[in-house]
Image 1 (spheres, one colour):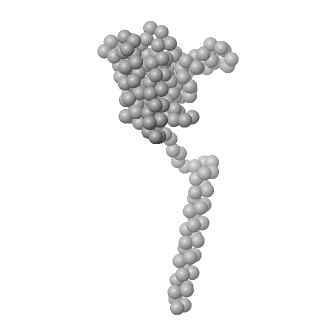
Image 2 (cartoon, rainbow, N blue to C red):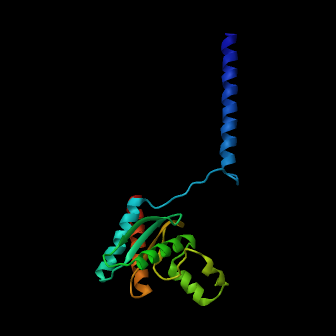
Image 3 (cartoon, rainbow, N blue to C red):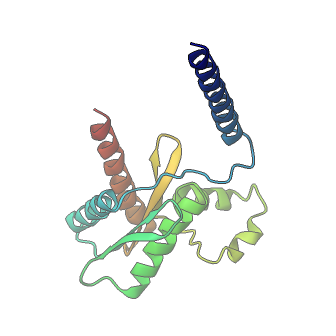
Length: 180
């Protein structure tokens, strides 16, 4: 009988120690200086659908463009280009998508801010991969930027911007369908 009581005390002590360790670990994970972080990013499948939407929208306007969709780090996931799209379009679309992710805004909004000259934007020319032309739009899940789409090749930036925005809207529609 005494052995059972001692065994129960030992087991209860072990459980108490484990609970203390687990609660300390979970509290530690929430403190600054965590060892790892979690990031969300657009999937390849969704990126492909976004790029296809931009291409289809451009095709309806008889415009040859290149479309690039990047992940949350600005790294290309998908590149599509029309038969007559040049290397300049590919480079432009890539840099617009990268800019929208890394500057956390559409390239149209960034360009408008630059034109207003409210800030000292003289350093922006040193942002190596950035391209401050219309046609780059971030992909968001709520307030979190999880990718970006860039379109290049239209005669004017307003068209690139329209195609990219339509593609970004299609991504938002995908998210809404997924949550239902």
